Image (cartoon, rainbow, N blue to C red):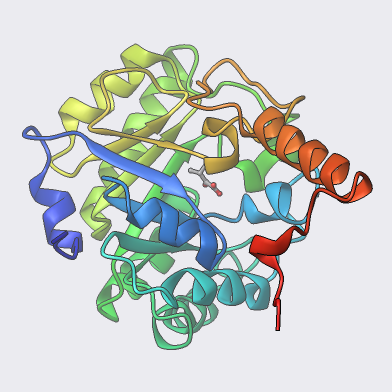
Length: 267
Ligand code: KIV
């Protein structure tokens, strides 16, 4: 039987075993993910994109994240569940950050939270960690900063930007994060950050040298026809598989093949 994964288990994997994380936003998917060998379920604010059809994660609210995270924890996954703090739930100040992080554990019953940014949110990270709420950091292409970045662009290119990112990573580690997501950064910068830290890095679009990997589940299962950035590898083609199943269903209903006796109450 699968053992429950804790934050300490994740930290201890550094240098021994690579960490596998995927997103999930509902109980059906959480159950499927937990039947696999995945270590961490991230209830990402990418819910705004893949569940709500928004172009950015900016409209996502705390209540929506509490709802999605509660749906995931309802099936009591053995994988560690991390709730993603949405835009303006922590940037506004320390007190609001701690209260909102606390809601994830108290109401949504996950084990940790993730938030984006380095130095500029360091006081919030310290305060949340001080409240005994484990925090996962997130640097590089942090999607809540899309407008400040001028679009979804690779970050940390060039000496100055790279140095800044390494400094932010060290500050986050010092503030107490238990792991760090690196999104869309050059692979050699990810290698430098990974070897500079004693906590694990989890990459997305950050190459092979991170201590782990994360993908949005709809991307890795091939559930979208259009969205295929360079860093996504599709491990299934569920879009076509589901359309095929639905077409078969439609044909059988129209031709009177389904429902047959096997799927009817004969008395
Ligand atoms: O919201 C999300 O899914 C994320 C991952 C892509 C890291 O932040």
